[in-house]
Amino acid sequence: MTDLSFKDSIAGTSLDVRLLLYTWANISCGQLLSHQEPFNNPHFNLSSPTTFLIHGYRPTGSPPVWLHTFVEFLLKRRDMNVIVVDWNRGATSVNYWKVVKNTRKVAANLTELIQKMKDNGAKLSSIHMIGVSLGAHISGFTGANFNGEIDRITALDPAGPEFNGKDPSERLDPTDAKFVEALHTDMDALGYRNLLGHIDYYANGGADQPGCPKSIFSGSQYFKCDHQRSVFLYMSSVNGSCPITAYPCESYTDFLDGKCMDCGMFKSAGCPVFGYDVVHWREQLVELNQTRTYFQTNEASPFCKFGYKVDIVTWNQKLHWGYLTIKLHNGKEETQVELNHKSLKFERYVETSVLAQFDRDIQPVKEITLKFCPAKGLRPRKKLRVLLIRLTPLQNNLRPLCRYDLLLEKNTDVTFRPIPCEDSNF
Image (tube, rainbow, N blue to C red; front, side):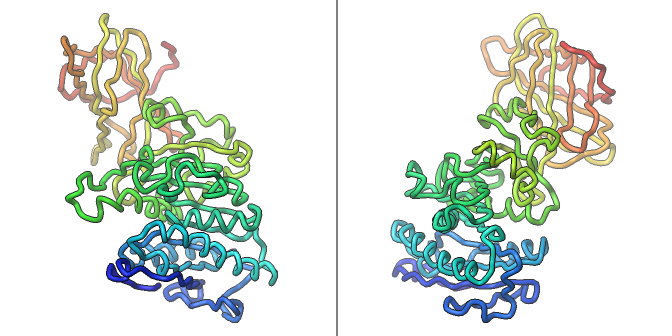
């Protein structure tokens, strides 16, 4: 791929689109496709599926660090043509608004190529476009030129500046392909905030990603870490080693409160899996039109977390507010989560529910440790009397874990062995 520098960004670059073809036969080294005679390349098989990989704004001019790994993951999944759309000349500039204008020109270039592919026997239903940031909208513009007949568009943290609030014709939208998915990881800065696809994923709420710097003194990572995380999350889904469940929900708060664990709308299929393999839910998602989903991740690969729906019934006479820390043990290792996104309300004989997401799967769970931290107030309650705590695993079809009659004292660990849950309603 074209390798430029910050000097080029300051000077500005004129658009030049290069198409780099990768296949099983040349997985480690892309071959430049001719715009005039692209089919002269013996490795370009029009009967195979074709995936376009389109980068976004490149303010420093360097090639994306994730490029070759992404290509390798795609080609390990199936035999296909992977075309990296190198528009680094045109994407490298300190003038972001000039780069935005170039997105239409890149889309026109890709439209010309895809039309040639179609004229020579390729099917639009075999084309998948993966666009990062501005590349997401380039995918949308290209798809719109074919009246939404392209099979699939994947938008990885679609660019927000200059696109937020725009008419659908001026950005990516669900009509641009037969199936459109969008992942949001930096919606409060460089990414797009609202729904764009048949399914929209909001990782960790869609804004701040775990492990990313919180201070501007961290350098360039402060600006790009959240935005770039979308690529690494999707690459993980292509790799398939650690599937992530996406939960349809109206808000991130409702998701954290455990209100969105029921995916009955998908019937026997259950909740959709985020990313590359979401195609198994595709037909229902298209019927639903636009589905907002949430999930949490770890700060590094493997990104998948393991969730439990936690239900608690207390029997204190007076109302209690506070936070819980839950630790799971299997005899050899342990994992812990702090439920502190908000103060939990504990009312006598009223079930309190919350979602607990652990960084790894600990099985079998032999011991559970709880700690209650009262919320600050005029008269914080120091003891929480638990009538029932039930942890229901959200993966692996495992049985719920229960414990009855516990006394949790302020900031004190209480460890117990869980037992099978009784069929009781409170």
